[in-house]
Image (cartoon, rainbow, N blue to C red; front, side, top):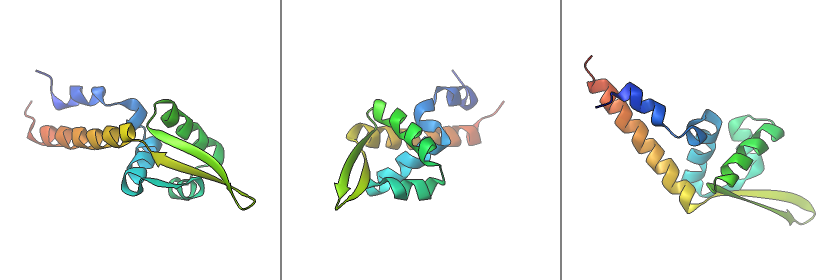
Length: 106
């Protein structure tokens, strides 16, 4: 039987990376938002945020839609059903690991 510290190595690194965890957690609360909101929320540069969103989009955890509102470009980011399930499961796994670590005896 593994201990909680060994189990931590099984966390999904795509989701567990701090910026992507923040993005998915924020999107799970609001379903969809615009790129500029995520940029302000995470304090990332445009290039860095774009790279993280590309990874999440390739994994089909988010969907990025580019459009024009009037003459202004607007990028919307939406969590997918797969992304919603993944982030919910990730937080449940973290909570279970936390509880197991609290109860762990060497």
